[in-house]
Image 1 (cartoon, rainbow, N blue to C red):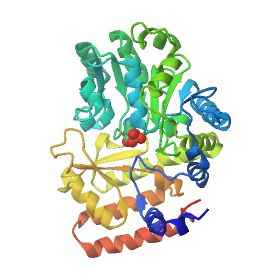
Image 2: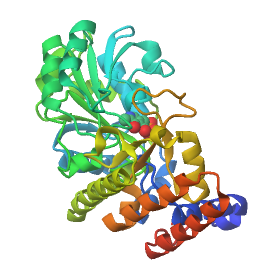
Image 3: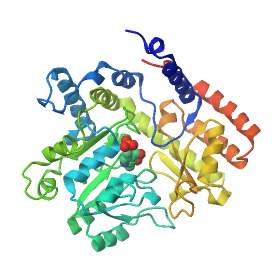
Image 4: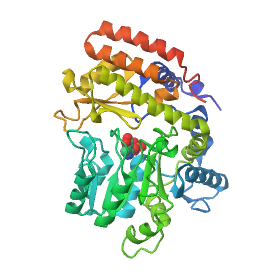
Length: 432
Ligand code: PLP
């Protein structure tokens, strides 16, 4: 068989270009990371050929003896990593994991109380343009204007008012940790299910760097490619103490299955067809890496780097939402600098610094413009950068943002970015 390079030089060249881009840009998108060569190898493997609808030991296809073991390895490692009682590693993405939770826990028209997208929440938590907001009656809680943080008393009042069937926690742009106990009290008080979407923070939770939702939320979903540093994908988990509550409250009327069976059927056949076995193998590899001691060191450094950078930005006169961070991301409100997110994202892109424009709480700009940028530390921490380099990056960002239209200035900063990237090499291969 021909190599990719021989078979399809056009695509191979694009992969070379993208590898070069990843090697020579400062990757600061909070939802991205750099998977290891081992994870990438498992993803680019012959397991992509295998159909395996169903679950280990109960498949609709023959020839599943090897992939059954692969899926069990992934499940067992995920259970160890998070102290979970049950997991499903088949969701193709964070969004499909969330779709399965809705299918299992809600009927169309039921009320969800979710974290407002414009305050940091995610599309799949009830946005009107997403299936979640179209199918269910979504109500929202948000952060306080003066603190940028959630106020649990206000969330309690809102929950009493809207009486949700399910409350979701978790966000794409909230730099603070959550009070799961207070959320669970509220859920119990109003008879709701509690769902935590830890897509962004799963790696930090796995290592105990952030509080653990599993003992308190009825169900937890995640992506596997952000702080968890695995392949692109999703997962659903249930903690050890959730069995009784889920058995009683999550079941749709007339259902007699236990919680694990309910979520399994909500993934397949409920919302997906055949699992991506090559990705599940890569999830197994990533969970194995995350169980190693140096993953804890990595997550601790990720957090330290985000904090160091947030402090530097504050010194440089930037307005950081909630005045700091507990996790891997910071959200900068650029309004005091007379800038918006769109201009900042473009200017930084010209200097090989990749961030994304982001709404800030109580934003006055549209989602296409926004007043802020979101910056994350996971990817560059994987490359080995520490606090000093993250402070240096804050200074580089400031240099660009001081003269956002000055192309000469962009070029100078880009050279500094290249010099920094050269000190922390990343990928020395295009395909594994
Ligand atoms: N949930 C949260 C909180 C997210 O931040 C994201 C992605 O950014 C998702 C779900 C969706 O994940 P995916 O892009 O894999 O569908």
